[in-house]
Image (cartoon, rainbow, N blue to C red; front, side, top):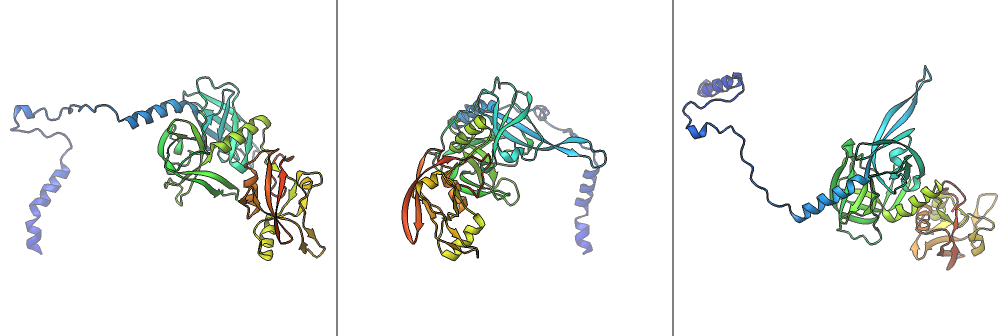
Length: 383
């Protein structure tokens, strides 16, 4: 044991001495003259031209960057003792310029619970924003600043109906407060469904592996032509960081909903005038052995009434008999109230849909013209 320690003693001593020496250049005593300049910066090797795909990505970012905004929110807090109201930072997110009238689109969850929001443009200008309208059911909000967005072009609009899995996509946003960041990936899947933390279902989502982190919410998802094809909304990750599974609201949904939010300040889903009950519907499906939506009421004078839909009869003892069960819309299966809401949301008031209905054990088809909802907020009990 002692022999081995003695054998390694010189090495140990040298290591200790080296550790105690001050850091700095050690002159070479017998170095050749040409080697004495070895500490000079190395010459740069010419890179050559950028690859074509690199040039295209750079051009896409430079064209689109001005259309992306940084959103910061504050929340009003009341001091328990003094009753003074103060504003404290709440969070940050992303958004994009929609038009030349000062409208900015973002996720509803970016501004939910906030008392004020500030929109910062890429040129450094900041504006206090007001809420022009919101649709929590779609996780979409429209902000308005008091002046036109001079110098910030609206994002060119694309289409999500013709997207293909494998297409290259680009996300621009402010992840973790790191403003105007670009990530890229592909369309991983289409028509995905996602349930938010508050239980709100989102449908028809675009799935992408482009890195989407907290702070990217509300930013644009672009195709290789620089067109807006979606709004980055959520990630699927147990850790809360990007894991290659991000989701975006498709532009076709945005175009429909945002237009109505700007015009009316709210979004009214198309309806037909029937009453449903989500919790009761699940129990009825189990008892009756039928997947669909049980019609529990029909509003007099509604388009459902005109089409002849029949409501179930409920006895004093709570027994439900008769009534129609909606099982499809234009041939697309309906197996829950949430699914019926989604199916109807693909249409506009005035459109006619073909309802597949089970009545007295028989499957029939009933055309129903959709009407505009009279409610400012969606009521899952009235369709």
